[in-house]
Amino acid sequence: MGVVVITPIGLYSISVRGLEVPGLLGWAASYGVPFVHLRGGPRGVDLAAQSTKVVWQWRKAAVDTGVPITGVTADADLADLLTDDVSARARAAQKVVRLAESAALLGAEWVRLLARTPLTGREPAGAARLPVLANSAVPLLVELHHPGWMEPDAFVPLVELVDACPAVWLLADTAQLAAAIPAGSRAPAWLGCVLDQAKAVHLSDTGAGLDTAGHALVASPAAARIDAGQRLEVALEWTGADRSPSACLARPTQPGVINVHRLKRLYRGPDGERTLTAAKNLVERLAGLRDGGWRIVWTVHNLLPIDGGPPSSADWHAALGVLGVADTVLTHTCSDAVYLSRLTKAPVIVAGWSGLSAPTTFGPEPEAVGDLTGWLRAAPYTVLVVGNLTAYKDLPAVVGAFTGHTRHARLLVAGPCRDETLAAELEAAAQPGGGRARVYPHRIPPEHVYGLYRAADAALCPYRVDGPWEFFTQVLYPGSVGTALAFGPPGHRPGPARHR
Image 1 (spheres, rainbow, N blue to C red):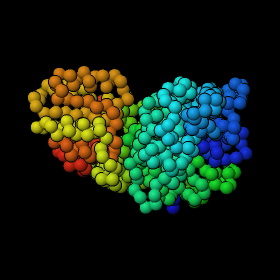
Image 2: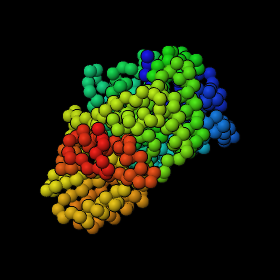
Image 3: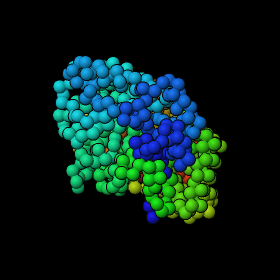
Image 4: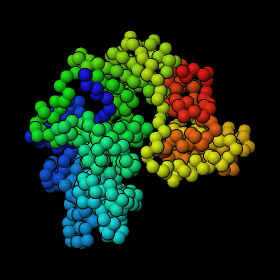
């Protein structure tokens, strides 16, 4: 049997030939493709040459079919925008500007630029301030198409360009990046840098399949970043010899296993909000696949969404509906298994919790992480809170209690925070501590989290158990609990010690 992990995976239009844009979107909708990346240059649909009326018609088709065009690829090369030839640079910039404007009109969120020629460090001074890069109508995603990009002489100026220009990001193509990794090697340090700056990933199948070691080296850390909360849009790019509609989606040919993860991401409407209609469609789709011979497995990380407000009718419908069609339910702890067995007729299997590994092959820790580690080690007693900084953890109250009841210990709260109000509240709560409480509202690379745990004397895993989060008293502790237990420092969390 094949194994398919359900996550929103779109399709790059280069994968199929013979369909105009409205027909492509209708065909994609009929197969449940959630979004499309459109080949927008002259070798594709030549989006910039289309009239406003046509672009609006295509946008309406996307709305009507429920298949948005989220990204557009250009034929232009990054080198054309950075050449010393001023006239050539101006012509290339004009083409990219027109395409970006048309892409924005279409509803796309970005335009991809090819990068077939590595940078040399001799590009025009102030390249990041060039209007085409600094003022693009949509972000520009650079797709590295040459293994030479990974050489320091090219990679360093690329990183500097991306860092200096907020409109420039990367697109990670598994085939292109895998080609730059020597056979038999482990994931190189540069790969993490590429994925950290990426907004999209293309699973690029030339006909040889996607199960090779090179593809896995790229896809696995990308999946880990998605699980950690980084927004990475994933699409299939099929470039085999036969690109007919029937061949494009013909793999696998036999039913296999659908392993559902991160359920809350699978029933969103076009605006990104979870909706009851989308939840019903998800459950119906899974039921239909099960009737067709597929086996449904749900790995339950969270029964209900734990960030934001109380669970909605959409959240309950999705959770109970998937439990109703599942053939097997996997969970991390025995406590979870006891609770979930009351909600499903499927067997519930405890898979355990592996936590995060402590690799030694990712090179030196980032400067910011090293600074935080040193800050922890310099105190007589230190407490660490690490993970997504969200409302259900009640972190301002935690920081306030710490500063009010300790004299010499230090507290570090580290992790990405997408709520500006919460971030401000945390900073304010830390002020009375006189520097003993520190808030770092940014993502810690998973491969370097272990350094913080090793430096701390205790890991604190706060979360509310009242109101909409009362189910934490019965089931599904946040992942930070399992991670803390895996790394070994004493862990402190609310409620009874039921995490087993």
